[in-house]
Length: 260
Image (tube, rainbow, N blue to C red; front, side, top):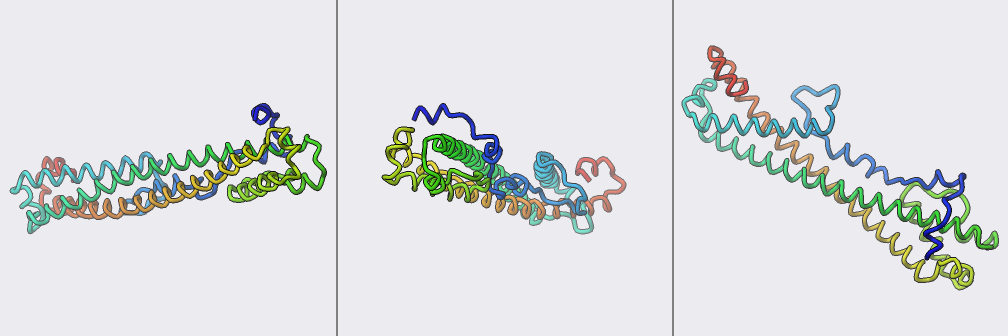
């Protein structure tokens, strides 16, 4: 396969068509899976993704501090609002915080896996695309008839859509395995074994694409779970702080400690 590694790039008419591209679902995956929960009032402008994640982490951490403070000081808890914050309510709040933290951690893990799978699929896409571009350049110069060039899919543009690319290159490689091409293609390094390896790489790209889509779906589901549990914890925290601001209006130092 030495000739495959030393071929000139695709001609100027087709080189731009063989740039690395991915399915639309993967191009938008990071944005769709990184969506953080909205604030109480819908934001007009979204925060940068990293800042969204940090905001969620801060909310969970601040709620944990609030719960701990009230748990350690029953007298303070009793002064919140007309009825205070009971032990039962604190137990429920601890469960909300634990769920939100677990969902946050799980979502970060799912996001990391999705990013890894997307990168792997993109890299494999680029490899298959380049191999196919080389295949077309080499065989255009190998003395094939016009009918054979058409049958092998050597003319026209390389599809940018991944599934269309896979369909076309599989058709080309499968056609190239026929006995009629053996003398010409074997001389160019495209033996049956080499063509089978290219087809195997295409199948692997299909598999990695499916894995990436699954990982994206899992990350989106994890984000939704995190958003729900964080929203529930936020409602509890906001409720406690709102009551505290009314009942502890003459104790600004306590309000500061409660983050109210």
